[in-house]
Amino acid sequence: MTAADHHRPIVETPLAHKTRSLVWTNEADTEAFAQQLAARPEIANAFISLHGDLGAGKTTLVRHLLRALGVQGRIKSPTYAVVEPHEAGALAIWHFDFYRFSDPREWEDAGFRELFANPGLKLAEWPEKAAGLLPPADLAIHIEATNDTERRASLAAGTALGEQLLQGLHP
Image (cartoon, rainbow, N blue to C red; front, side, top):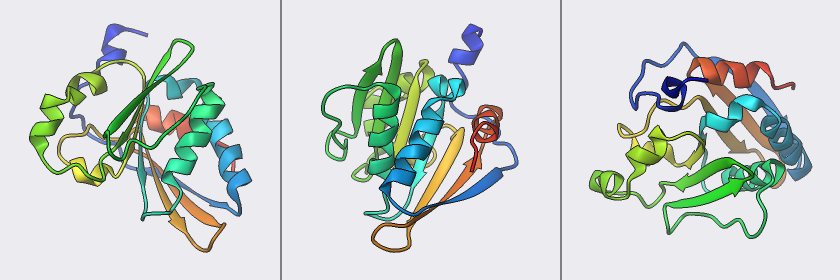
């Protein structure tokens, strides 16, 4: 891996989306998916965007993913802080929640450009609130709650790295 791999441009041309649809009938299915995603080596420098209504399961998926990656301790939602940093061994992870994001100047002031330029896993809930500032997601996950326990997930690769992640996941 070269320095260029770690310092991708903030703006790049997204690929034609390759997609996959999944149904998680319960939280155990969500956890199993998170474990499978965590096992992919490409995740170490991925940007994953999470889309869905309030209560769809975005934060639940992130918590399962962080646990599967080896994050210890309390995992809280970054709704008020906007970003929560985590570490799993040598892996740096940033969990963003842009739900309350309203001013693009916050982006520069908070140093988000630098965080996205550095190596590590970036997970962003409500990325549409920071539209125009975020790079293309390697993998976009859209989650829809169909009832109290079932979730439909649509996964879309937006970059070559995202395609590698998607290819390595089994339904």
